[in-house]
Length: 116
Ligand SMILES: [Zn+2]
Image (tube, rainbow, N blue to C red; front, side, top):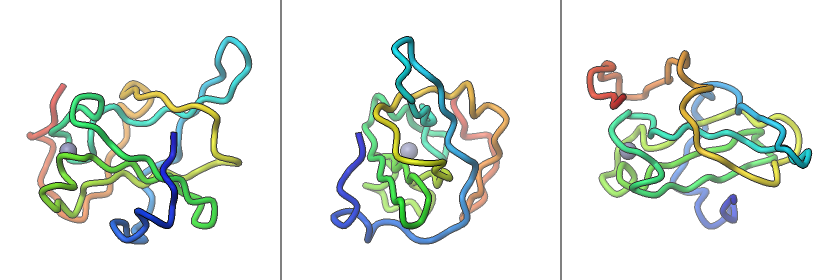
């Protein structure tokens, strides 16, 4: 689920979004947001190191921060994904819908560090 926005807002800036959030509809008709399973830098599995997802309806974005990158104060510790409509009831991690996305990096460092 999403964190309380005010508490964590300070760790984010207003950079351009990378891409729109991908969605799917579950078997029972729930709208499920798919978030990238790998952090933006490509170094960590978010399921393994942990992450924070913060939805801002005001900005119309979801920001997905990698705990490992955030600890090291990496400028690219978070994805910025355009939110479409109301925040969804559920969130899942999956890289597949984001396979063709080229992240907008503040600190470009190539794709060599990306894990498969
Ligand atoms: Zn990371």
